[in-house]
Amino acid sequence: MPYLFALALTLLVEVPVYIAALTVSARVRPARAGAAALMVNCVTHPPLWWFLAQVPADDYWGYFAVAEATVCMVEALLLRRMLRLNGPVPYAASVTANAASVIAGFLLI
Image 1 (cartoon, rainbow, N blue to C red):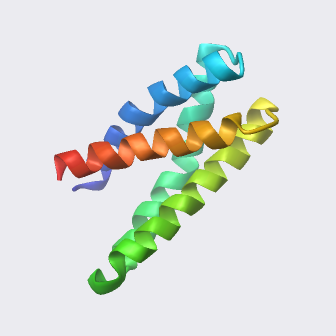
Image 2 (cartoon, helix red, strand yellow):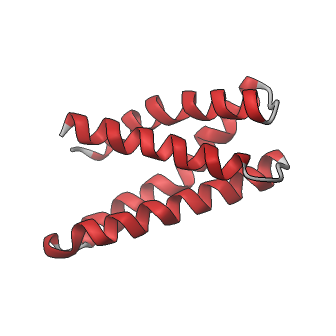
């Protein structure tokens, strides 16, 4: 899957999930939630893509799981900081958004 397609798919899936989760659960304004979702993905997606391209095929799925878990944590921490959120909401939103984009990617491969 070419990088720009993967990035577009990620944003297409994750940004609406983040907006829904953050506006309902944390009462963040939709525009602010969308901007934050866009920013965290622009921080994490390029290094994730680069890293996974370097992983040997035999070890891919283990590295993939650890890399996705790391992305979830980084995105949640960034959301906490940018949106001044406490509690589990940024973590739950990050896991949900990233799971949705992984599933979308698997469905298209």
